[in-house]
Image 1: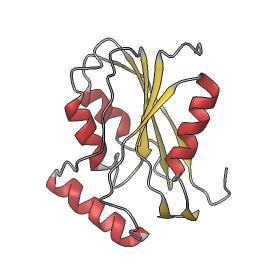
Image 2: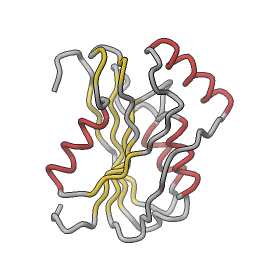
Image 3: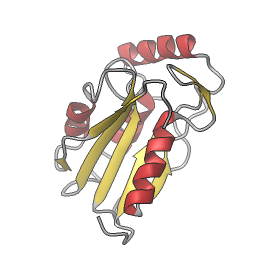
Length: 159
């Protein structure tokens, strides 16, 4: 991919208490997003919500399960115009078989913005790989070319 500003990495990352790697400052997905940016020259847009700030791992995953069960769509800060990008990397942790619900808020808001564009899903996970993330991205953006994606297993060995 050329470093021409036509790609963007859109991601949600949870800093703080994380499974396998403990308490981290920027979040596992942010680390992977930074690698993608370094390799491709893509811009970044981080989906930020303060709903999960300071939560320990177990209460966080319990809240995530409840949000998914109820179809909640938590708000996030800021936004991005995706029209100038041809390729969109979409990433986040896998929480209960898919991306966190805040990402679905983003998907709903931008459902019509990615027609004809290439979307590359990616995840960070504890052993679930891509889970249902690729299928959920295909459902959210039916007019896009969604690739098979890639994942990074959090095995506690660091990056």
